[in-house]
Image (cartoon, rainbow, N blue to C red; front, side):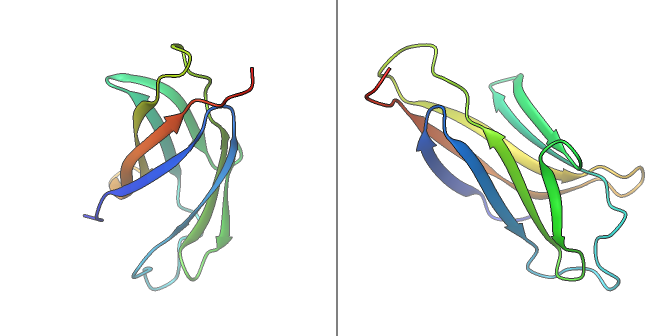
Length: 110
């Protein structure tokens, strides 16, 4: 299992996360189905898959970019932590590729 990754950003930002496998499989990751999920406790806030914000940038090296818009905070001026994970979801090959915490800070402007 990959070590947790700790990310931070401002609310409302457009993020593009680069995800790179330490040891990609022989033959690369072409044909893989993946899913990025951002969650608030047990509730998914957003999901991103291939074609909906995730792209393979180098199939042989096992590299992806995941792009999404960070949610606005419900309580103004209060930072919030979300859990995120990135999975291969092909039937029979489900595995966690990356996971961690995203801390979202409030922005000063409205």
